[in-house]
Image 1 (tube, rainbow, N blue to C red):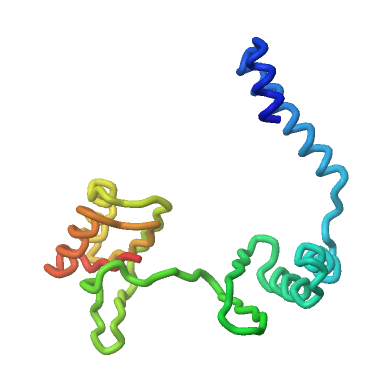
Image 2: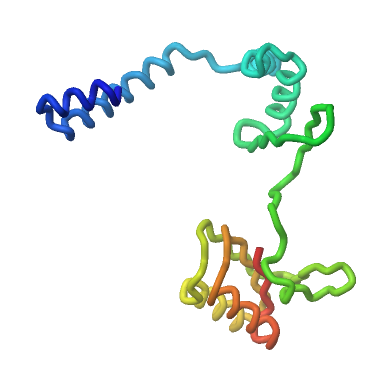
Length: 178
């Protein structure tokens, strides 16, 4: 597509017309593929598709089918390289974090080295936070209500993390960020 598209543009075709044409072709191709497809109705069908995808390895296909059955259509399956010789399936209920609290200054239980908050407000943020202005309304709301604040974000860094740590140490707002 790229090679032929470049030839067409070099020959004088409008690049925007080419892009629009490619977009229409993609929509038509996806629609045709959806007509041709058949959904996997049961665990055996999923195992067959998994086996085919794994170079006809039935064991892998069965593990994939079991994983799909356990997590459902909306679940997430992550495949990781292991250090052992056996294939294994670990099911995690709920959410799993790659790492814990972002600063050891959030720890308030020294025995278990954990950050424990009772009845906190929870802020979910799907981006990186580096500026404290993004957090001020949530911090002020938690401080006024006298409740702790649990922040779950892609990442918190710089000024924002430093301000959270200072507020936590001074006891202005109990905060934990992961």
